Image (cartoon, rainbow, N blue to C red; front, side, top):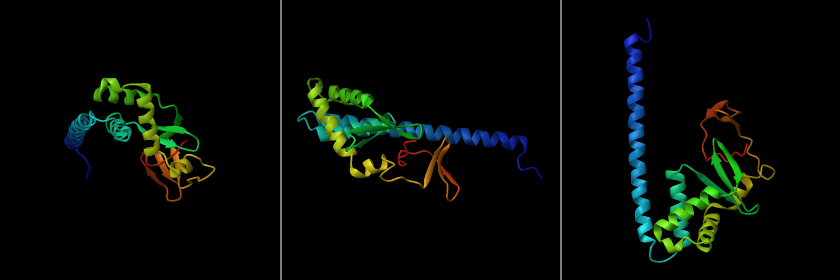
Length: 172
């Protein structure tokens, strides 16, 4: 008995294509909802400059629209950016661009260096803590449970492969 007949293979591919299209449509709908939420947040922020609230808008925009994740290590005074399964020590150029973009959308006169720095400081406070510092300093707290490999995170003691995620604070 054959597991798949020729016609069955077509059905499997068609089913996968349908699932993929459904997922993509769902993801686009979610992005539209997020954009609407961000627009509402921006409208509500127009009266008084609140760097903490604007920092929240920037973080939501970065993570959900741009798929960029940021963490801050306060002792090192360093930002980390998540890309391709690895957290990398970096300067926050893209983050600063997003701050500028959001400030312009809220109120053009707010797009000033001083206000950008205030929002960046609020992001540092929101995304930085001692746990982040420990996680990004392998000498303080090495996480020996996982090994970062090209296809994901290997839980080497159990032999289980998991997909890459910003939740794993791997720097190599």
